[in-house]
Each structure stands twice: as structure tokens, then as C-alpha cells.
Length: 207
Image (cartoon, rainbow, N blue to C red):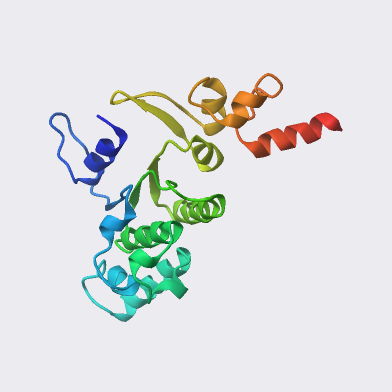
């Protein structure tokens, strides 16, 4: 079983062949690897409203405005979803699933194809969501993003979690599945796992 399969089981899109999946009745939403599969309308605004089948009530409009602001989409609503950049499509797809008000948000490779600035925007959005009590479960090969912004990391292999811990502990203990900063600096700074760790420790050492 792979990571995408695991997320589809958690979201309810697939049923397990054995065992059970239970989320205690909490609403779950999944952001797939390819955001374009969520777009079916000719404008982003129409696509987003599709996630609110009860229509344009004052409550739904306020919710729509909050999510568009959170995902930095306010100026893009008249655009066709396929005319958006990769980062904009990712934020639009995220908005579409957030409109469902999930308490558990599943993200499959959300930084795929994003540049550094869009990754920072995404990290800020996820931080706000977790601050509001949303549980975010993210699977990714982007170890630098996970190390920089994750609260807890785990290594998924052959259908099992074989290692887990807080990002600093997790990545400093690994030799292969770790960050470039950790590989380069571990002989000098064993606990450095992201670039800012190395810069900070170099500054301390030079004083």
C-alpha cells in the first residue's frame, strides 16, 4: 500500500480489504496530487460555489469570502481554472476542499511543482488551519518542506510507519531520507536539518 492509497482510505474514497479506518465521524477532505481533476466549471468562482450546494446564502457568502482571502484568490475568481498558474491552481483546489469545512485535511504532494514563494504561502495557510483546530495530514517527497513546517514527521514504507518523531529529531537521525542541510552539516551541527538552522548555528559559532 502506498501513501496515496493510504490517504484515499482515510478519506473514504476507497474501502480497506481488511482492517478498519475510523475518524470518529469527523468531516474529512482530500486534496489530490493533480488539482485540475477538481475543476469542472468555466470560472474559478463557479467552481468554488460548486462546493456549497446550499447556494449563495449570507452565511455561505461569508464563508466563501474567508476561504478566498485565506488562499489568496480574491483577484482570480473570474479566471478559468486552467488559465491559472500551478501555484494558483493548488491554492484554488485547496480552497475548494476547505469550503467543505473539514476537521481533517489530507494533502497528497501539495508542494509538487511549486516554487519557494508559493511554498511559503502554502505553509502560512496550513499554519492558520492548524491554529483553528484542523488536523492536517500531508504526504510528500519534499523533505525540506516537511522538515521546515511539519509538527511531526513519519517515514512510510511498504504499508507501514517505520519511524516517526518531531522534525529535528526525525531528520537528524536519518541518513538517506533526510534534508540536504542535514547531510552537508551534520559533522559540524548534528541537529541542523534546514538551512536556517545551519545559518543560525554558524552565527553562534563565529561569535
